[in-house]
Length: 209
Image (spheres, rainbow, N blue to C red):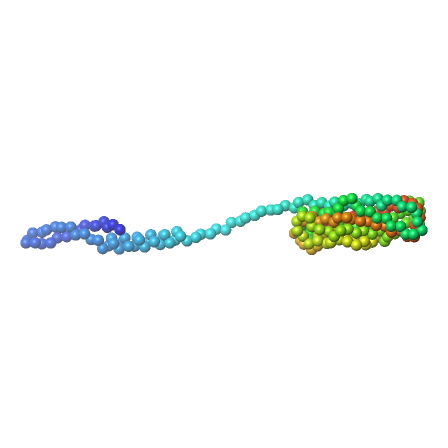
């Protein structure tokens, strides 16, 4: 610290003569200097206090497109008339799969059902829907992550809807689910008459499509 002296005139009498000399007065300026140091220290402390200001961070992931691949037609071939029951069966050429890139449905299912198989020659010889069955390998997740419905892994009549694959109670999850080797089987009655039998196979697709 440096001091700047302030000079005041003072007088002393000596032998009848006045002698003038300078007398430095330092005390008050030293107090002022100490006060200045205190202020500087306070300002330094204030400048080290952290300030915070809150903003906002946002992003958006948009819904993707959903899709399903499945079969609706299958030719079970030709057999010769028999006094015994006949069994026709075939596998769809492609796997059934659904891709849910929306995640807005907590659950959905791809399911099938069938109607009566009609004889081309006489409706009296129709094959009932209860004689038509379907099965597949257990469905699996091939992309993404979600809880799934395994599907129908043993032959079951599809006169009422039967699930092939689906998502089970998993809102927000996106995934691709697949079922391999989807089989369809028809078992006729004994002595089933000749003719061409046709029916309608219905595939109910998920609501996100």
